[in-house]
Amino acid sequence: MTTEDAQAAAGTAEGQGPVQIDEEMARHLENKREELFEKFGIPDEFPPEVLEEARERTQDVQAEIEEEVDERRDLREMTTWTTDPIDAQDFDDAISIEEREDEIVLWVHIADVTHYVNPDTKMWEQAVERGNTVYLPAYTVHMLPPVLAETVCSLVPNEDRLAHTVEMHLDKENLGYEEINIYKSVIRSDARLTYTEAERLLDEPETAEDVLEDQSVDLAEKTERVWELADAMHEQRKEEGSLVLNPARDRAHTIIEECMLKANKAVTHELMWDRGVEAMYRVHPQPSPDEWDEALVEIQELDGVSIPGDAWDDPRKAVNATLEQAPGRQLDKIQWAVMKVMPRAKYMNDPFGGHHALNFEIYGHFTSPIRRLSDLINHWIVYTNDVPEDLVALCDRASDRQKDAEQCEREYKNFLQEVGLDPSAVNNRGIEVVENPDDDDEDEDAEADSADAAVEE
Figure (cartoon, one colour):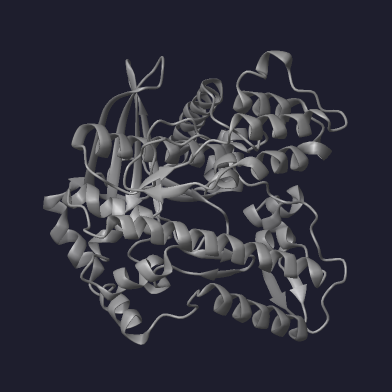
């Protein structure tokens, strides 16, 4: 059975095919997007000079990488792979893992975007203007030109790529950092896994050769190891008071989410405690006690829902425990009760206040420099140890642009519902314009957002 057949048989979004619409509906959607882009000041196209600069930086890539090898750590022999949705256009993060007698070493490799995009480039100026990539269902407005992001900055299999690696030596017992190293590297990804393929490797490692051609057995074992680590890190976060609004996250998502959280936390730990420098920290204020009480009372009054008596003292743990026991029909209402009282997270040059939802004393973004200005700037600070003079203004810019992007997405999803389209189906499966679309080609199943995405991402 092929991967596509398996996905179709399993009823996955990948296997159901795109949502079909006619040309008139396509024009309605295009007009709405243009209206929203004008309303929120979102530029949908790149200036010609920016595209030309991006194209120039994609020339003679392999020769440039060879010249860089001696100046970086050569990790090309290390088993490394990416895990993304089937429709991902760029692959900006990859992982490696090794279990040793007294420690676990986790490597998170991030595309070295700042090798190509720095403050002297027009692409940097565009990134500052845009602030982030805007993701609408079946439509994306990129922060960086795709001609760059989807080529030299994409960690595709069997190609040498420049990366910024976060190497974390973790204590086996408490999963704490024993050592953190951040450095420029050259990697060579061995495989590009979809979430479905990663799940299949975990369920049926003996079928790895059907999924992958090379290093299949090794990768199946590595995937199992990183899942065990991610699961342990996830449970530890919950135990320590991190808010998890989606208790039913699948394993592939959990692997990527937990590894990226661990790397982001490691980088900002390095910046704050070891270097003492300003950076783009992610600060999430906490609701007032009265606001938390309001949310918990609303949750407690839902039919079939009961907050465990021993969890009331810590609202985040109370919500986590309730979500795990509540009927499925009430999950959205519980999540919404929490979201209503949550202040917005924002970028600041000082981590004072920490990240309430994650319950991290210090946190920031590093793992998505292709789609977030904050990560791009933090890459630059880590590499140069130099802080931009206008860092405070950049923090405000990134916060404001994220707010605009979220509101644009919200209004576009509402519009899709108004015209009879399921935003989740469109988002998960994409759109196909046909003459006679199927009337019943909608998917009611929504892929739930991660806890951290729902709260602050």
